[in-house]
Length: 155
Image 1 (cartoon, rainbow, N blue to C red):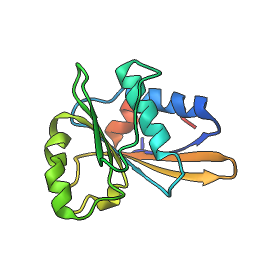
Image 2 (spheres, rainbow, N blue to C red; image 1 turned 90 degrees about the vertical axis):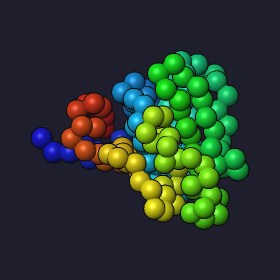
Image 3 (cartoon, one colour; image 1 turned 120 degrees about the vertical axis):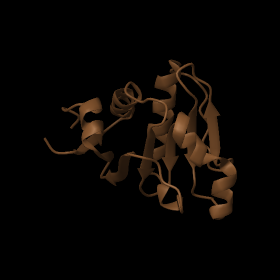
Image 4 (tube, rainbow, N blue to C red; image 1 turned 45 degrees about the vertical axis):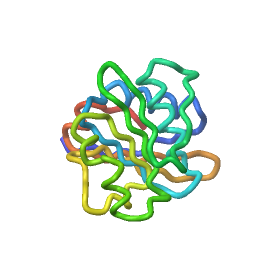
């Protein structure tokens, strides 16, 4: 079997929530999910849905970390870090966030991962978001371990 590489069409919020549930249910401390794609492609919506699923609160307030760079959420199974690195000023800001340490023991959702200069998580789940007509599309790529954890039948 090959590593994970699949496309998922997200035609509405229910589809986004279903994908988020599939991902959130297998996340463990030390996992990183890297979300890339253009502005408006659905990175934040998917991240919010993952956080809400992990917290078990469908109506939990999950603000965008666009200006704060990081929002953290306490969870009994390990903290959740939701990071938006779009406005990151430089490598120094990245080290001040403590993201390298979060990669070890938190679940990290990273928007704009191309700004991760000098540090990288081990074995991330990479999700490339795009827009195709009126739908969002998520391309999930990862190792054999991610394929085994998430399973098949996503598309």
